[in-house]
Length: 91
Image (cartoon, rainbow, N blue to C red; front, side, top):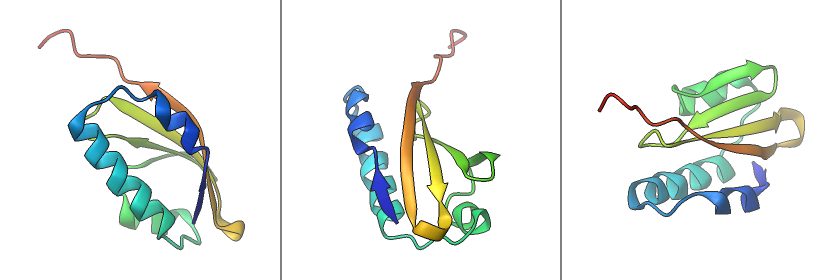
């Protein structure tokens, strides 16, 4: 898959665990050949689907959520947003 919008990921705060997860996630996405959402979920079971081509991926640890739009026929994944998840105040 062609991964576009990587510049959005530069807004991540530096964290070794997130950096490691993000490096792996990018590698898996660019080497994927998804033709439909089932293939996305087979590779990333924790991903969430918002509509036909809009997906959310939570980083590990759960600090950020990456929102992507996938054009399956063209083999393109576009990062559209990066959201910081709210911290759990009960811990």
